[in-house]
Image 1 (cartoon, protein in one colour):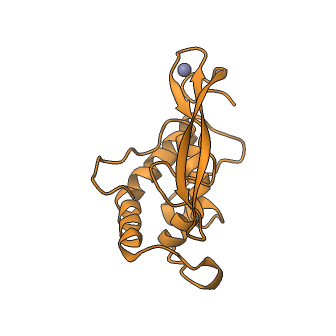
Image 2 (cartoon, protein in one colour; image 1 turned 90 degrees about the vertical axis):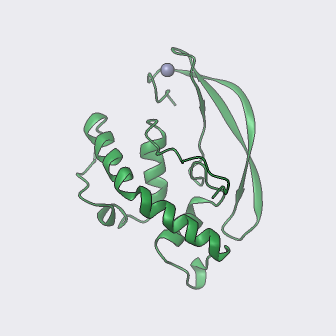
Length: 152
Ligand SMILES: [Zn+2]
């Protein structure tokens, strides 16, 4: 894995704990590696693909909430205020995510990249939220949250 800042090698710089809520509602803890860019010394946190930056719930739950998939095997085990907050978060940032995806694909094109016209089009992929996190967080393009007293 090369660094998102300089595409240089990275070295492991320690670990930190990251709590998250699984789709079943169980809270788990993951050990996340802190990695340092060998070129500019910037610290990055490894982001496993089941997580969304700054979100307590796993990627699958967050995507089910945004997609309104509260049915049988994708039942959402979250409290209503959390559901509302996550929906608002996404609808507020949707246009910025789209702009950053388009920017990423223009600046760092990968084989197979297609032009993205809208978030609706992007969300037709199965695990679109995982892809979104991967595409943006790995290039330091994730939209940072506005500091708030109620972590999502
Ligand atoms: Zn760097």
